[in-house]
Image (tube, rainbow, N blue to C red; front, side):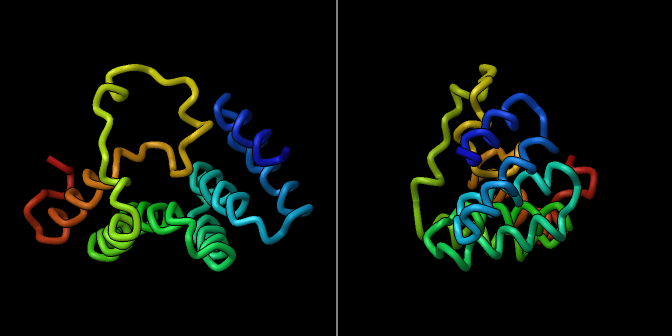
Length: 148
């Protein structure tokens, strides 16, 4: 119930309230990896990156098959400028589930108000292939810091 409530609040842009819901869920089910992952997503949305990383790592310990934790940790590494580390984490997730490389371009052209219901990654995630390519280019020094 708390996971679903958090998803609803997240979809409404109420990041702080969504985090509260996920944390209430963790008070009831402290070993729930999905709740730890989503708490990390909301902590990242609120700019609390170190706490977000801890939540993602805790989720990974509770469920080694929850591959979104690697993607989310990769996104945090990317945000911190660790291009090589970010690409490695994302390639790890892609190797475990090649379905993450599937890209739905049609959906990008349309507004999707339900995105927060089914995305288990930090908002702004553009797809595994995009992020790996971007990080590899940045690591090689072929992309200027402005991203152009």
